[in-house]
Length: 542
Image (cartoon, rainbow, N blue to C red):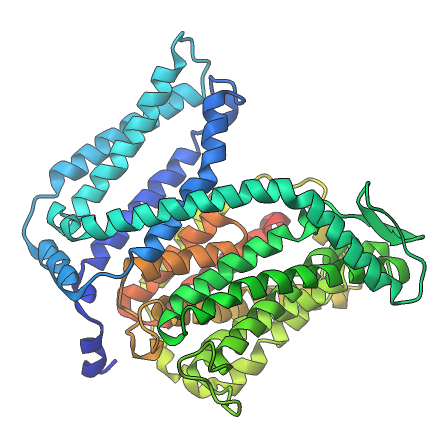
């Protein structure tokens, strides 16, 4: 990076990112250690108790409030950033906080061993549960106090209070909307049934169905329009995605005009859901019920969701009514955004397309390896800035993610754990070997490059500045760090392990300011997982 680029990174780059990342790594390591002694099945309190039911029902509200608070309160003024930076530079003693953290963590671990792995002979189990939770919370707070001085929190009090208040309002509205969908899903299902029946009638074939029992189809294949098929989940998902888009690109969009995208998205995704179900019935009737109920059932929905979302985004960028600076219709796709995003989009698109025509085992996986190579070759001149050089840091962090991923792996489904080896055994040796080679190359080479370019190369910097190429890969902001890691976890479906992995890959990039370090760390993780699968027959990781 040039000196000019460093100057644009602002005061937040002078924050002790190394100290913060080390604290985060310690917290993750301690969490993984606690997992080995934690056994929820031995909890000395009935699982259906009102307290646990209340915690479970309120968790969605807590997640929405915290997420909204981070999104709303992520932007600090230059004066607030300078005040925080100067607070970190003041000398202070850290060892009392670290000692307190170690002591309370040890207490929490000891109580965990006692409460969750033994028959607790106590008439007051709630006292032990309170001691366990209290020591864990105090341990985290003391670790935070060790690396974050009190003076650095002072500038955050007013923005954080405003963000939490707004986030609470958003969370309550979202919770009420969730209750509304639980009431409205049946009438929505009936309306969806009518739309699907009409679409099927256009083919000229007989349509059977029951509005009361909520099933529709042909004489040879019918489906039940349950909660998921009614379309309300798609409406909620596209509302969140478009809301996030409106927030991130708020400076380049016209308001309140851009808010019209929300109802347009809701209606469009609901109509698309009707087409998906009609196509599902057509595949089950005239092609194969196994294909319809396998990959097509979910993949078609994601394809339509991506098409609707990307279509609305493209519309908003090209329309003067939505965008402040309308993009030209003849604008080339050879842009930095395309260089960093298209490999992942090609990878996801190939995965969705291949899963349309496969039930359980993806015979067409090699296409996922080949497809992202197209944009990687076309945009090869943009990747000269990736500067590959040797460092132990990405190797160590990739190994840490591997250990974390294995430790957090849920119990495999016995019905699917042997699917891959059994299917490979039925294939010819050449075909099986070719599939395995493609699987390893995809995991170790194509996937790390495609995902890291998008999440660390683009999103991590785009959340800081609209001109993401002017942002140093080493620049740290809490908002970009958290949002990009959460998005990475959401893509992988395993939220906790995925979020931690995204954080550590970001840490690899922060260490030397090189996106290539994040790619190497990701490749190390996937390479170790591939070896773990092939050597120890742990096929559930694939």
